[in-house]
Image 1 (cartoon, helix red, strand yellow):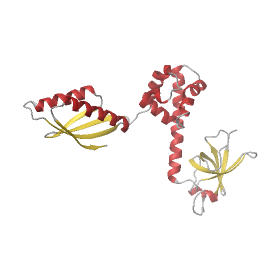
Image 2: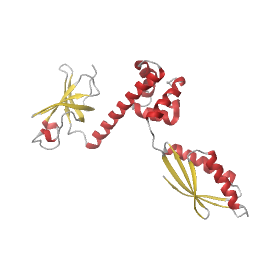
Image 3: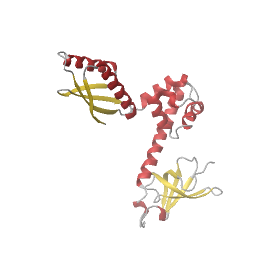
Image 4: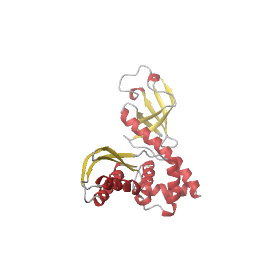
Length: 252
């Protein structure tokens, strides 16, 4: 049986409350239970434990003592900050989502769940301890981040992930100043901007004022958006060789 270590922060479910403390089950450690004494429930004196601990609530707790021979674990709620508890619970919920997605992926690939964990999750864990973040990386960059996963699984994995995970797009807005003194200068600029909108997905160019245009790039993250923006500007500079071209301002 696996046990947590002293000072680890673990996820618990409150199963019983007494006047002297709370009994909890450790959700990340199957079959293990722990105990939180009233002195470890809150940083201040606890007159009524029920004001601080609710039955069946999910909490984060710090491990104070582990006695494997007695299967006894002492825990503390008060030694976990509010921010740390929110982060830990959020990570746990994301893991549950990832665990659920692994079942769907196994079904989609027509392999057992054990095989799915071995062939897909394990290679992710080699580089990323958070499985859900690993799935996000696969959605953004494909399997190149995780060469241990066979490429033949990529299409099915991406199909499952894209259906179940929605990534909020990041946007970069850049003000461009473009002028052309030729008689047909305005038309030249218009054609160049239309070509950019046609050649690049999720790119828009909006007229702001005389000679000024707002270049808007949307992507899954700022890094990708910035790369696309740089390519767009590079292409515009080539197309508009006879024009005055200036990047004035960028906002994210």
